[in-house]
Length: 465
Ligand SMILES: Nc1ncnc2c1ncn2[C@@H]1O[C@H](COP(=O)(O)OP(=O)(O)OP(=O)(O)O)[C@@H](O)[C@H]1O
Ligand SMILES: [Mg+2]
Image (cartoon, rainbow, N blue to C red; front, side, top):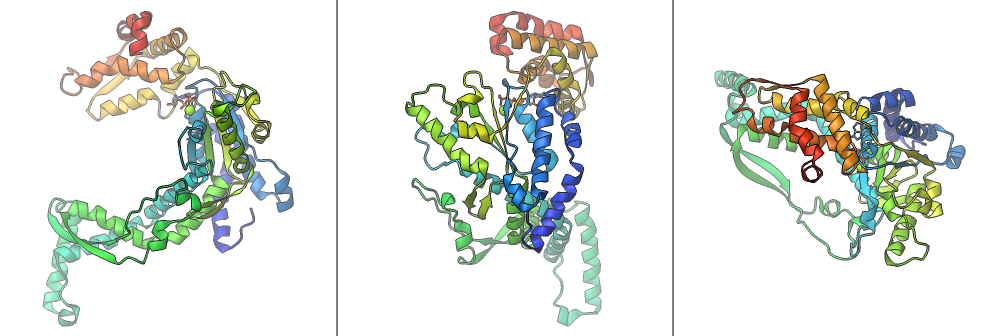
């Protein structure tokens, strides 16, 4: 992308550094840390992410010719469609928005047009960048806050009178003593009175078919500076004061214009929009009745956005040309070919995700960095309880999950949640009061005993698992 000015050039370099290491191979390697199987899907999203980057680097006339790599992920529920997209965004540190396509067809739902997804993406990007900048100024802001709190605890003597005097020196010493106490957290519960600056912008709610947001108008912006800043005194503990003042000081240190500029750039070059339930806006009947018309309408509205257009937001115009769109759906009833042809063409890449097997479940329970078993172990660790699973116990959990999916309904990996929470219910309830040992070991026999009878009984498992 042609970086128009110095700032954009810098931002572009920042993204370049990140993308340099994110080769397709590397992306898949990262995805593998969290998602089991679904190799084709991983490969395809990795290529799409990289291709967007390659496309940004291509000379301008050629760039226009290259189609964006938008993707449709097809697969049953709970097999990793959303998870892959979400992880991809995390890996790329990209703003990621998930929307349900059906949300735009809801009857009587006024004011949410399809373009709002782009606005929401930008909002996300703004808070992402703001958070990042806050982190960057944190050290500096903490320093200022410490001085402000010290000023309240040990008011400095008027400088003109006491400079270099004995009085000045004692104050300095006292101040240092308090600084140590403050840092050690010894004063956290003490109450002090602080003064916070607050701009008074009245909250306004405009009703009507078109929200202000849709017009790209930012009320806060228009009125900022118009209303007087109000200083407000509050009595709080030092611990609270620290966090309140930290907010105020970091806000002062952050240049919001720069945040917005970076966020717009980030959304346009790295943004990912995940459109879920795209199959629900496909139409199977050829005659257009009521809901079909509305579904087709949504598809039509999607066309320009997916292809590349400019959407006005309260932060300024946003080009959607390089936003990566990943659509997803089960496509049980409708098929991708039931989407209007123009939209099909704009999602040229299709990939199918597979139902998960017992073996996959075993891996999902054990391999990912955030694997469910590790989550429960971490939860119980907070109570001083060590939770251990025998390997064949985990195999048994996987077997039962696969069995219930087959017999009742296939809800994919989400089944592991219901199975595990049923299995661990007693332990979670009894910790820490009622456990004899600080180590709990789960054996295969326990899993069978606790779960098999439920799993075998169709009625029971319908309700419990
Ligand atoms: N292949 C997988 N590897 C690891 N975890 C998985 C996998 N598939 C699903 N999960 C886990 O199962 C849960 C649901 O997965 P996800 O949200 O991706 O489902 P989905 O395919 O988007 O389903 P839906 O169509 O219902 O939205 C998540 O917690 C995810 O971590
Ligand atoms: Mg999903």
